[in-house]
Structure formats: structure tokens, C-alpha cells
Length: 124
Image (cartoon, rainbow, N blue to C red; front, side, top):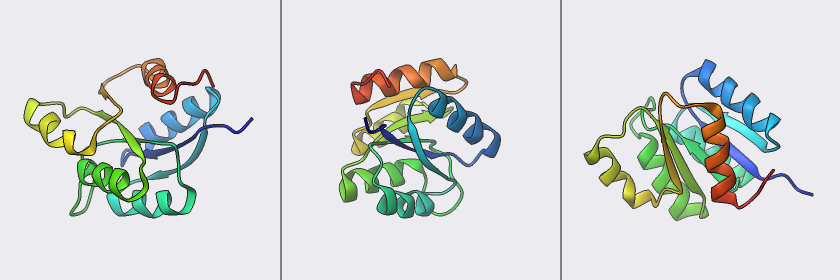
């Protein structure tokens, strides 16, 4: 059985590593961690994940919403936003990315795993 491929887009290294360990333990194939929108697009092009876990605040000219929109339009990859930024105006702007879900920081890793399983329709 092929494990669902997940990409993490998070600039907080400690949180990214915790997410990576948790998702691998839950049975997902984490194809890598990107710390910027540009890195996310490069990683997606190379590995074509089933889903991206996307922070909104990223370094550089483009944020996570920009990255999520580009992933959806270019590769058909959906994103689950995992961010502390959930203000109504931010969520409205994020609708263009057609997010698969949203978890607000701080969240339990089990909550993240559950939403990924729901989105992918798997019990990985």
C-alpha cells in the first residue's frame, strides 16, 4: 500500500519537526518541509504530494495563502492551513486557495492528524 504523501510548509523548525514526526508515526509519507512559498512550490514540483500542511506567515514576498493558491492552480494540490492567523479577513483571502481544512494554532497534533485523515479519506 502506498502511503499518502504530505508536504509541510512551516518556517518554525521545531514545530515542523514535531509535525513531521507525528505525521510519520500516523502512517503518512512526509516528503519534506518547506520554510517558504518558493521552497513549497519546488518541493511540490519534485514530489507531487497529496496534501500540503500550510502555515500562513512565511518569510519572503509570498505568504502561505499565495503558496496554497499556486499549489492548487499549478498542481491540483490542496492545503490544510495550520496557522495562528485565522482572522475573518485572512480566512476570506484564503478562500481563493480552496483549503481542504483549517486548524488554528495552538492545536493538538492529534487534531492535525484527524483532519488530514478526513481530507484524504484514509485511516493511514
